[in-house]
Length: 94
Image (cartoon, rainbow, N blue to C red; front, top):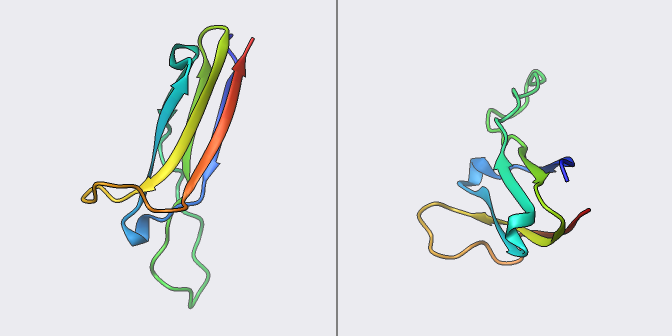
């Protein structure tokens, strides 16, 4: 308990996507929080203007147990997540 992990995901904000998550299994074992976006790195001269920042989430162990955290890409105006764009983490809190 009390363990903290930061999980970083590639950004797709320039395409309108944002990472979301759901917790299954024993959801009371963890707390998942979105962290503030890090400042964008300096853009090399001549590089395109568009940029998608990485998205970061903190996973905090709250109680002994096992949970499955699924991160998925979704546009806010769409009902379903993007197909094939998910990351699944099995989390064990001791």
